[in-house]
Length: 94
Image (tube, rainbow, N blue to C red; front, top):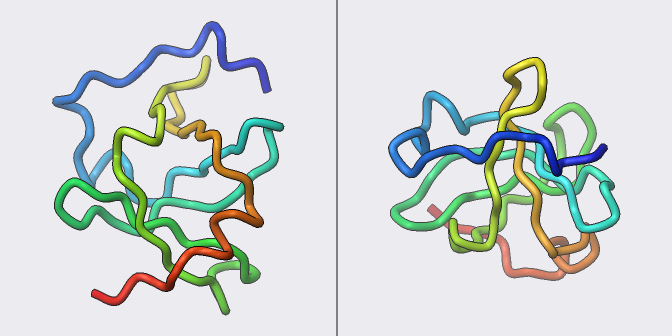
């Protein structure tokens, strides 16, 4: 997926209603997880699992994700984290 023409979200759009469930893509455009919820200034990402079952929640700083809308208006994020790096993070408790 080419993200160069995708519109970046304004900080006012970084709300649970807009972000929850958004897919997250790593640097190689592999889907690495989905947004579970926001926890303060952190975004909790569900990593691994299948259809939400067995996924591990991990928290990253919101500034480590670049949220945008594609041509159809669907929200997603891009990060430099790989799926393996996210899976190695401690599980978010909260």
